[in-house]
Length: 113
Image 1 (cartoon, rainbow, N blue to C red):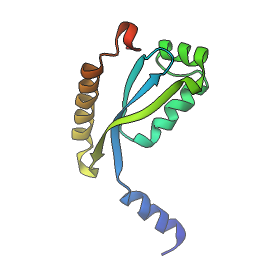
Image 2 (cartoon, one colour; image 1 turned 45 degrees about the vertical axis):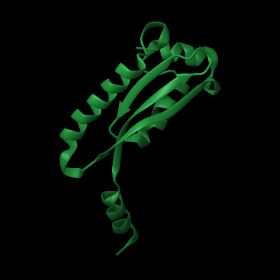
Image 3 (cartoon, rainbow, N blue to C red; image 1 turned 180 degrees about the horizontal axis):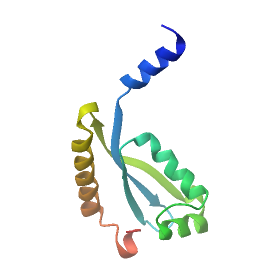
Image 4 (tube, rainbow, N blue to C red; image 1 turned 135 degrees about the vertical axis):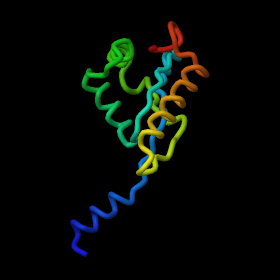
């Protein structure tokens, strides 16, 4: 098998993990809860914050004010996505995110929601 075909096959065999993550401001304890169908994209969230383009303006303002070192980004729960069950995984992910929002209550002074 040539290298290109081999890489293509490896990509197909890679399991995608969806999940819920949180961003914690260590300066004031505020929390942002997010979810993604591919946890590898969490680094994309950090990139958005670094370059001032995150969709949550409150979080973005405090990221700009306190700096990257004041924040922790961590995965709080993972969800394996089966190839043929993408729609079901999307629904399950939404419920997981709602569970974490309910549990952590990151609203008002406690968070960015």
